[in-house]
Length: 66
Image 1 (cartoon, rainbow, N blue to C red):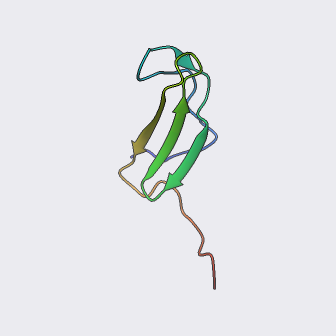
Image 2 (spheres, rainbow, N blue to C red):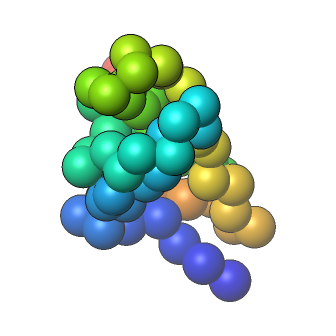
């Protein structure tokens, strides 16, 4: 089973529109069992989201209130 590690941010993801590599995501949003990445291509200005889904809860979030 794979766990999400935010320090292992994906790099050089190809643009979904033109294929140019994008150095790093603009936004990372962890969730229960998944991590979402927002990418913007500076070559063609295309924006897209990629989602990594894990078998187990990816990140444990502490409760916001007691």
